[in-house]
Image (cartoon, rainbow, N blue to C red; front, top):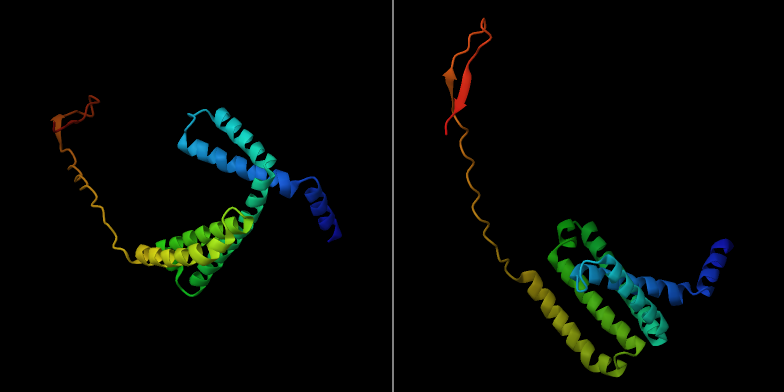
Amino acid sequence: MAAYEEVIRSAVGIGLLDVILPFILVFTIVFAMLERSQVLGKARNINALVAFVLGFLAVLATQLLNVINTLLSYLVLALLASLFFSMLLGLAGGAKAATSKGMRAIAGVLFGMATLAGLAQAGVIDSQRFKILILPLLIIAAIIFVIYYIFRKEQTEQEPAKPKPSAPKKLKPEATIDPAEKTGVLWKGDN
């Protein structure tokens, strides 16, 4: 057990938590966004270079590293809470409810609230205003959003009618072939 603790301490000592992991996180998110949106074109090397530079800039900004570390702790808690809630629904017999759109809405609300709480804890948002004004409004809006998202009527899109399969072509004999003369029947389809 002590060997694991020494490895973790040495990894923390070389800056795993303060430099390497935030760099990898920022690089991955920026690269994925650039690849998906293709803002800079389809050149992967340009997207990787821009993501690499932004990752290093994020690591250089120490205030931003504090915000990232604080925010990640809250987002991990929100992820665990939504995972446990989904597992609870699945164990209670609601396997379909655990993967439904309502569960996605609840997870989205949890992530949104965790993001704002993490930003308030990191000092990006004024924590006094967050507690008094923003938090109650967010909770009310989240409840209204979840209720609307769960109970709204599905808009069914009518699929275009599939064409009926055509009847197979009827074949009719065109000529008779004699086996002795190594001939048989040639068939020709209707055109």
